[in-house]
Image 1 (cartoon, helix red, strand yellow):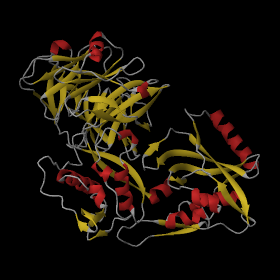
Image 2 (cartoon, rainbow, N blue to C red; image 1 turned 30 degrees about the vertical axis):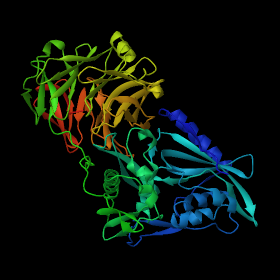
Image 3 (cartoon, one colour; image 1 turned 180 degrees about the vertical axis):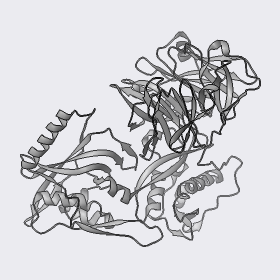
Image 4 (cartoon, rainbow, N blue to C red; image 1 turned 45 degrees about the vertical axis):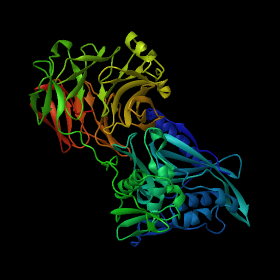
Length: 596
């Protein structure tokens, strides 16, 4: 019988005294029956695999259970044997009873741990606990969730004797791998879905076992649908497809996806074109796959002439090299590019409003900023007067999405937002706590108060909508620690935001109060301060994390998808990141921001 994992979220840094106590306790556990998994020795062999239709780079050949092995040795051997993915983890299953081997689902969850597992005996002589210090977890969908530092997981395992040999009779579903084993056995893969009106591709990063049949697993994942934090926020034409056979053969660079005729019955040419393009976007990134084709009964599917509504959505996105900024001599909105500022033709004089925290759209003709005391989110164009988009208290730096909606957060409700919430057009409810997430249509006709029930016990520090407009990144503070949330944006057919999906929660290595999208799959975060040392962290949705060289007094930073450039600001200078260092630029502008 499979049982759930239990976990303990440790927090904070241990003092020297506490570390010493932990060492003493660990030693006591060893003396009391704590067995540690050997990390070297004759536990098995590994070899490189040759090339097939789909090849893997490495495989492990662990040993099966030894004759008359102790319960601890059986558990240790099983953990190592989980690296042997061949024949559906046949070697690992040999450590289990027949019943447990049949029920165990190895890919229900994968824990990535550091250090060595500790096998601890309990009062029940047939029951043991395996203690792990876990860095991250990958769920059955392949979605990775980094965990807080010092997170521990406890696996309860029961054994029984079968013909005089110990075998595992009860265990949780899933496997545990150290980081090196995980890197050797798993590979990240981006699935692509569409935004609500099929104008943009939306990436969804997953982790799959690097073994033959991977293309099949990827197609099956597309059919199953997006990760939970994107459900309801993206369109998936593949959801109606059913494979005719559990394989996706690859020949001469072409992956053939044979589907049941019934699953395409009644579909239009436009639907079939979108299905094929979704497969091309996703599988086209795989080695040795340059093309895809849909088949029924192994015969090519006729996708028809290109439909006028069909768009080949790109998988990359660039916001361009031009930024918006505030000229610190005139207090006016300006363009900033290559350390030079230029005036924005036709834009109104906003200097009297004390503008700060500006942003703009990719076209560079719509601008949003906060007034001096952060009580108004203001919109401007290069051909009309300024207008109030929303009002509130302690508004956060705005984000302008590609659908013309400006986002901010207010600390409290005010009369303007209450009226909007009660209007016929504002359908969403107010979020919990003392903050309200606002989305305002740029023309000012609608102000949406977005319902975010999962923010009840946290404080939003920053928001930024993704380049394609289907996701929002948020920094949330809880119990004096910050987390990065990535959530899908649910919109109606007109593009009006209605709500946010339960988020993907990503732990950060350092505190943060700002977030920017560096690419479609990476965000840059940091806790800006005019007086403190600031270290930026780039977080990839595939589970990667890179920290930048720190800077004293970094009060702002900017980056944008598609240009791989990062700027930082202090009270005295503007800097650009060159390699791993910061190089000073001419200081003639403040509050730099790429579109978004």
